[in-house]
Image 1: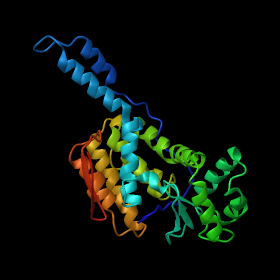
Image 2 (image 1 turned 135 degrees about the vertical axis):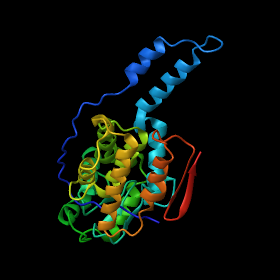
Image 3 (image 1 turned 60 degrees about the horizontal axis):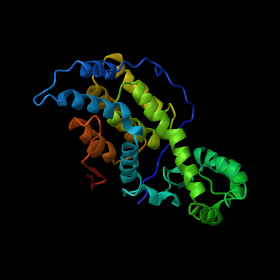
Image 4 (image 1 turned 90 degrees about the vertical axis):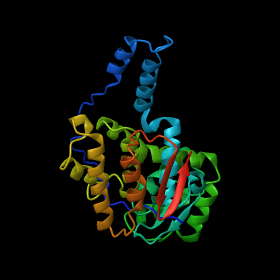
Amino acid sequence: MRHGTLRRSYSLRMKRAGRLLFVTVPLLAVAACFAVPGEGGDGSRAKDGAAASEARAAGLDAPEKKELAQRIVSSAENSSLDWREQYDYVEDIDDGRGYTAGIIGFTTGTHDLLVLVERYTKSHPDNGLARYLPALREVDGSESHEGLGSGFVAAWKAEARKAAFRKVQDAERDRVYFDPAVRLAKRDGLGALGQFIYYDAMVMHGPGTDPGFYGIRKRALEEADTPAEGGKEKAYLDIFLDMRRKTMKAEGRGDTSRVDTAQRSFLYDGNLDLHTPLKWKVYGQPYEVK
């Protein structure tokens, strides 16, 4: 079951995003150098501390954490942990954005699907979707299917069997959603959970300001300081999720479980580094990653 995305604005105005992030890794590294070895003389405490610091510094862009992020998002978007099954997905989910397609819910009405096909065509001009570029440009910003229809759906599914098209989908997901979310979360002093919370908000609401991801963050900043500003990480993320939930309600989404019984659960468990094993529920369906 595809639950889809809802994106509003693509104006990328970012306020207060460029603050200097002070991290504790160098201090921990120095402390490790001067640590007193524990019993047995092996310095295990210093080693454990350095390892924990390194794991936190890696963040959501570490390969295993990034894979975990895609699985959690997929549980909410697709009711499945197998996000790789979604490359060939294409359907109108009646959200006013035309066709929703691919691994992250690119849509014909919000520009990102058009950019995806344009980029793919630039490197693979003879692909089966290239003929639909004029129609995609015409319907961009609307829910219209004019010039697309069953032929476009069949072409998308056919291209999705090709490694090259899957690679382009991965690249666009990272360029538009994953990388900006993780980069900004790190600047805000957030660990892997906070980086995921930003990423999931970016996926659902788009990189817009009214009421997209940047709008949600702006409202959160009015209520709480980020860790980079000296605030408490858990308190800031709790406020961010409050703002996210209000946005979902305002958009007419009756079910907010991807916040309430997934991300908020991880937060209240104190799992700021998104360590496994994880258990959560979305739309009442339980999931587990060991």
